Amino acid sequence: MESKSNIVNKKTRVRFNFITTFFLGAVAIYLWWIIYQRLPAFASWTTYFLLALKEGSHLGASLEFFFYDTPKVMMLLFLVVFGVGILRSFFTPEKTRAFLSGKSELAGNVLAALLGIITPFCSCSAVPLFIGFVTAGVPLGVTFSFLIAAPMVNEIALGLLYGLLGWKIAAIYAGTGLFIAVFAGWVIGRLKLEGQIEDWVGKTHGAAIEMEEEKLYFSDRIIYGWEAVKEIIGRVWIYVILGIAVGAGIHGFVPEGVMASIMGKDSWWSVPLSIVIGVPMYSNAAGIIPVVEALLGKGAALGTVLAFMMSVIALSLPEMVILRKVLKPKLIAVFITVVASGILLVGYLFNIII
Image 1 (cartoon, one colour):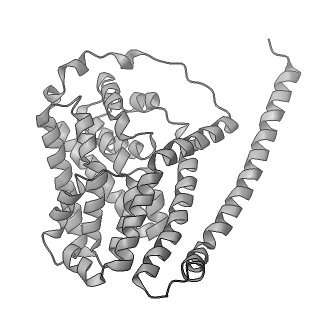
Image 2 (cartoon, helix red, strand yellow):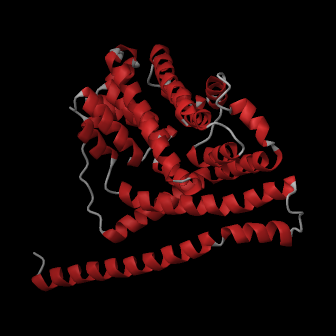
């Protein structure tokens, strides 16, 4: 049995580590903020002094956008992923399954959509998560609410939208995304499509295995956050750069009137067209948000842009291919139809009221 003095010494070390980590974290956030505030000056200096481009030129505007948004988005991405990585250390997939199993449909849909925001998820984990939820007794509709909300209304999307476009657009996106996740999950649950799951899924019993949860100290959670940064940014940085490059081209070379005529609120076909264009694209929130920023800056309607972004993230063709491993074609078709209908509704609604 551990002696009392050893227990006291261990508690003292834990307290000291916490204080040291907190102090170093505060210094790091202060330095982050100082650098972040100077990014506009850096972009302007690089474009018009270092490269000696003419102010007001198309190329100058594009490069200034690129040199400003690239470090800005990467810094925001680092901060958001690190913070939510620490938060995610409290929410394991096992805890999520246990929490959702046995919940009534509508309450389960709402809770699943909310949990989807902060629970680790990517397209590659769609199949094991789906199997785990279904075999744990989570209703099909509730499972779909989680699978829709997790990639679409995730912390990266909300953090970048807040940092680049402000809290109002971030709040609108979060609210409408959660509505679509709850609505689509509830409709799929009402249709009783459990028979449209591939037969082999029902024979899987992976959820019956329970693992003892490891006790984590605060320093462990810091490491967890850092590992999340390395994993996620290492996976998405190329899409971020490509997205910013596309946004820079739109910002510098596309006249405002062109985007307003194609993606404006007066064009009834702009919302369904944006969904049709968005579905075949393969990107993530970090890569598509710089494009969204440029589109809104050039006069595209908010509802149309939201529909485009949601279709890219929630209805991407690669994710449908992955889900085909566990879902029969009829259920995939229903899933696409219900989610697309919700996105259409959101797009038209915001084009009318804003």
